[in-house]
Length: 450
Image 1 (cartoon, rainbow, N blue to C red):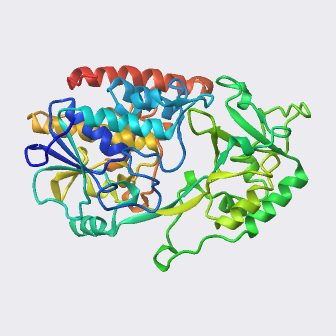
Image 2: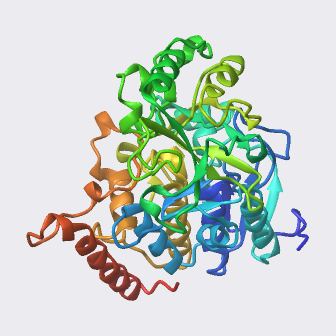
Image 3: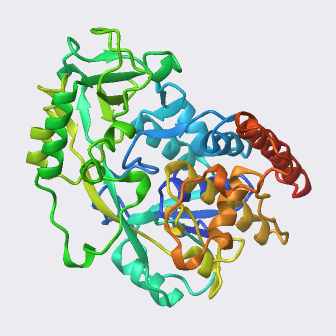
């Protein structure tokens, strides 16, 4: 649907067309609110990590992580978002590729599906433009993500009177499947989950692992700019060579753990295993799981081709490193994600300090719901902290310690503890069962339609 900027009168300005911004716009539009969605890519702006101009582009992994709603906090928030009519979850289902018990997507199909649905909505006007100045009035949702343009970042600092926090995030390499040596590599999911053959596995014996570890820890890495030198890494997305530097067996207990993977050549577990996950529907490109890196490109190809099965690997994309920024949300935002010093502005997504595709989308979802409620003269309370959505939002908007605030994925540690003692093996199922009841009650009492 073509919409003219001059004739389209918006009620909410959403700045940023990533996962959080698109989800916020969708939630608003479906509640009858007219939205101007601004995205700088395609309008003269670009980030160091994006590849194109598509809305909701997945910059790092193509995985939304676990889809197990009974035993995993991430899988549970998937389920809660689906119940709340999430566009991100709906489009992920369309673009889904095999990934065992995880939800992974063809990133191009996913982005196109999101953009097509938003473009067709009568209440959404997408504008390719870079916003450098925060508005002084009018409902605004800032969802510019961790790669916010410098001019707008400086505006945010000015509005908040706080220095932005920052951390590094790294991107994993992607390999062309037809360059993998299947005389060595084999298909199998850990413990045969999912279809049992959703990952490609490359085994290493002890000598191969020791040589690989040595090469990782001595390989040439990308230089830091002066302003980047003291920026911390996010623990959940640690470069592979940084993990290796923490100890000889750190990788074997992390992304290279061999447990649950029977090498058909030996019938046994290898000393270490590198896994690759399908990255597109056609299955022609595969992502190296947990192998985000800041090695220079030449060093990357040399080191990664030491992996048995990848000795002749060709790369669709090499790994990289970029700086992510976020605000101290527990100090700056209220429970409705509004900026305390300028309550007409809400923040959503990774710029709030949540970490991960799903978490970013979930915060955008609530930003859209709460903004729509405010416009229509009602109020929406945070979901209870017994739900995944409520636990994540509570952490961001005040439950976390502002002095030590760092990016966080959703996890059961953020949830309100169970009222009664439950056996450890039954604890997660008890928490997810309680969460489902709590979300239903919240949607009913707050009169929130799915």
